[in-house]
Length: 350
Image (cartoon, rainbow, N blue to C red):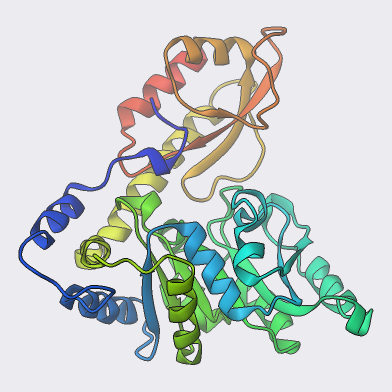
């Protein structure tokens, strides 16, 4: 029963097969391998964006941070939700790679940016002229850190505000596949058609060993990104092993199949939790992440059974009244089975 993180799930067997196949003979380094050309073509097809520029890096932090550095000067600010991954979980990497850009935090329920709050922040920034930071870039996250999703219309409402000030827009898509499955909308609809200029297209959380794609829908940013990727130490010499993973991910819609499995597991988990008296939910569960609460006694039983998940927030204690509710974060992966979910629920029921 492992619900701690989709990062901890294994790589898909087809991905491992692709890596093994790539591990034969010689291939040109630094992204000049033949596999990368196929990756580029497939991602352009996936997003219906024939002019898009596509690059690979090994981590989501690199994808987000180098992309934001390409889009945002150091004297400007990144507008992001206060619970965005770039704010809470990247150790200041966006600020580091941009050379000092601030992050202006925007409120909104369930980790989704509130349009009125964004509008107020956009108007407020630059009120100090040369003495204050300038407007830089809007960064959204889909799936959000609360497990909710933006529809294409919700994304467009926010990007249109940013673009009214001439700002570029970025999407952190570490779980983008889950958002596509959850909304039923196309990758194009959720990105460039909704006003997104660049997306970090995730794979590590969804069946890959370790690779993320950066997609620029406007190729004018390509050369600067290439330079920043190299200067930042994220240009792989043996790039074919990144390409092989991503190519397997895109072949026969594997990326959607794995996301469908993880979303379905989370839906099964939610349905079961709702049927247990006293269960509470912190956020709507719209993809593969569930935030829910149940009794301390049930948490103790789960811990004894070696179930892996996080109490959320972390500062809750297993010491205290058994009937008190403690909340948790549960993440399903492409390998989460019905049996795992059902066993987890049975232990809560006691």
